[in-house]
Length: 296
Image 1 (cartoon, rainbow, N blue to C red):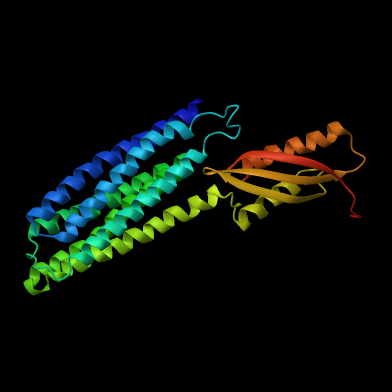
Image 2: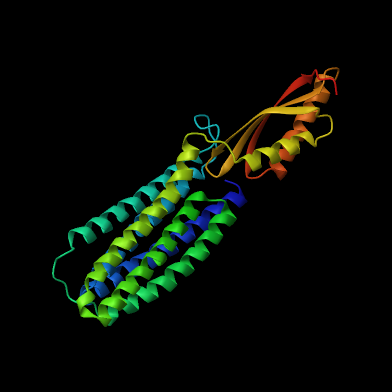
């Protein structure tokens, strides 16, 4: 493993360990506050924080596999492990959403105690803590090019956003004991937030698993870079697919038919170099040379 990759792996693991520690502390604090403060919404939020710890562990363990170098059985590397971890994180988020929503619906109509100030204080602390953790994690995720860490960062922000309706529900229920049912409504709103976040995590990861290509703007940029190379008369049949967060590119370029094999190879080498150095997230390039038969 080279120095750059080793540094990236260390940064991702460190972010995972920090997230795990913060989520364990918040989950315990919310659970205690929710039970002592008689708030179902805060208890539901504690379950959400606990689900975050599972994804943190998956991130810490998974980076060891997807950062492994290419080998004979995996010539394109192991980055698809990162995509699988991302899908797993999304599914865990969705499962948490369903569980929270189900508990909230099942508890409607049951007599409940009005929540107390401890539930509100912990909810407010959670909002600030998880938003700060999100901002830091997403910064590290983008710097390291890790889609799994960025997905986990959004998991952190989901916890922060979900705590907002919890805090509102607890406040309303504290001000008017007759509106204690608002606490259960708050838990249901939390589940909707969490389910939406799960969709945003899973959809792009599934696109990667089924070899969806790069966005149109990326493909246009790659084609332009190929055409800018001296000696390239045309470019076509450009295909892309994601391997983890990195892009593999196949492209056919046309050169003058009377060029030697060596000259054609040199043009292909320059096309590959420019796409790797200047293309968006490009990690692998295959260039096929064809004779140009056009009239221009």
